[in-house]
Image (cartoon, rainbow, N blue to C red; front, side):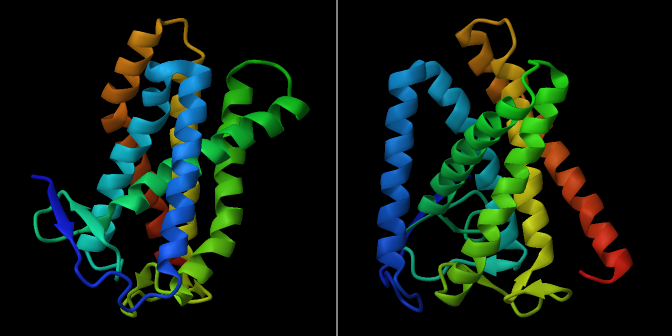
Length: 227
């Protein structure tokens, strides 16, 4: 069951939270409007809805098991009742990340590898994931320092500026797999209606692949002693 929670102590324990939220929301609206004007409502839903749904489950799970939390936001959403509450703006922020890096990957790879085939799709997906990690290497330490999201001290292993290294693998995995799924659907010969339907119904498959890959990376990190 989905719960909506309102925090009466907005900005508590966080620094510069309002500018962060305002900028992120404005970028989300800009990308949403641009996508709608260029691709139409159906393709826009195909680009935005799957990542929003998957991000909701992943973020809620991360908060519910105590890996991190989000203090001081105003509006939260939870799919685990009273546990796993995640700010709605964070979920929308994942769609911003995805749209930006997905298109950056397409733009970059299409310039160096012009063949429109499966190899190009894989290269675009991997490149989008790498770009996402580059941003997170800058964003996550800043966010943690300002308490936009806080990693719990119980998480052991190698960290970069107090951010667990496993977090960067999650960024890569999520953006890479979402780019891969979106590219395969986008380049199919189906109608826009069917593409949208496939993108929604394939969320469970894409989500399962993300979780399996994340689990394998976690096991690898534990084996070599960095997590």
